[in-house]
Length: 201
Image (cartoon, rainbow, N blue to C red; front, side, top):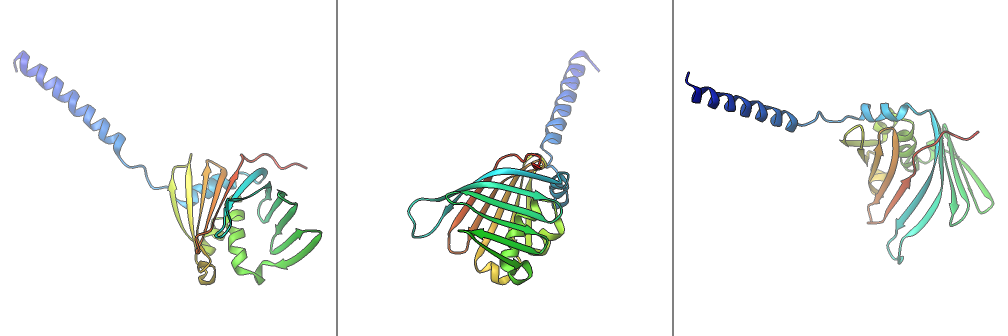
């Protein structure tokens, strides 16, 4: 082999090697699954975070805004304390739901309100990393990577599906950051969540 052939062969070899590297980098990442996402979330056993929410409602000019604090303790306790525009709370502990608004308190079991239960489990199940609960109530599409992921939840319950088109939950690692809800009539709400902190005692 003469010198020119050796040089050409060396360049060709380097070119093939570079091409192989680029093709390797372009190889699709294995699809993210629900178990990976819920595994990240389940590492945190409790937490609390501030939230802000904007709701777009047909017939009302401008979004409706609310703010407050979310908290949870695995496996079954979840609370939403709204501070703005007025004080109200929702606490779910196991199968018991307690609502407080305008000085009144109302208690009920989740068994009696399956449509509401699914919406509660969308948040509680995600916060606690409960894949079984999420799969029970929703058909789930998982997108993204462990660092930044999205769960798209479509209700399995036919009655709920007539009211709720889908929920989209976005997170970073083990933190849930955004919950978007689309109703069948076109109304929408977006809840943004600050990074979770250790639950105050």
